[in-house]
Image (tube, rainbow, N blue to C red; front, side, top):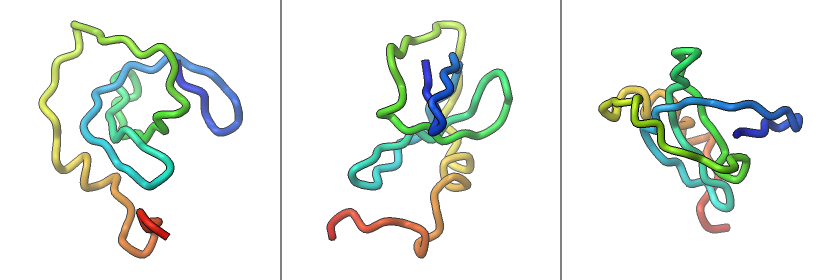
Length: 79
């Protein structure tokens, strides 16, 4: 289950392709299986994750790179 920034909850099926850490927040860089679109999910908004054995994929470096913010948009890891 995922809760968006407005408090709306939904069930998502994703392919987790990468992890982005922008302290203090961690993000999953993923592809939404049902929407067939790249998505970024905050890990602290995910509850009760489960593995779906029907979803098989190979991590896609292009999908990861396309979701990483440009250097000027990134927050420093240490302030």
